[in-house]
Length: 202
View 1: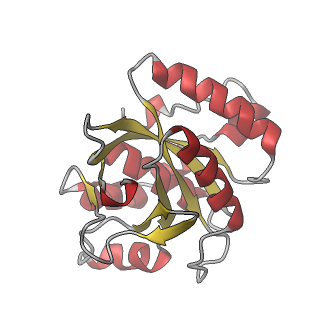
View 2: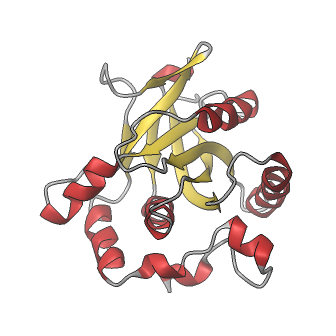
View 3: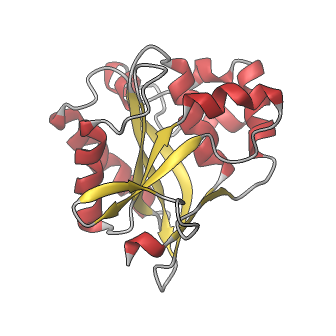
């Protein structure tokens, strides 16, 4: 059952998706999660993330182009699309958007235990106070035909692989690294811009 899987996100994937949301604070943003499942499908490892869009995030043609390029690039590295992340436009909006559910549904056709991560602005706000050690997003998983919040029964859990990830994230925020993150919107406007964001961690 996909609902019983455990999810672990690497620091690189985690930081990239949060910085993407911070760069476009007044817009909804989204992106894909890359990784692999354990042989028994009991654990999903999220190794990387790719920021997709910050303008018209529901448009199909740019999404299809992005999916092809991302699958090709990461497939050579032995990784596949294992989920999706989303940040809502409004700071106080904690609902899972229809576009997030639709894209999540599409991914589950190929990867049934896909993770859907929704950025939690309240947790992000608490980060500088130093108390927040858990991921600053909510995990949703597909349960039948609907998406349910993971972790409520303690069986579906999202953890960050590196325990210092939130400390590193704070350093990136204070040094305004979010200004240099590139998403697919940026790349489609100017193909010289690197959607892999290799320079971000140099």
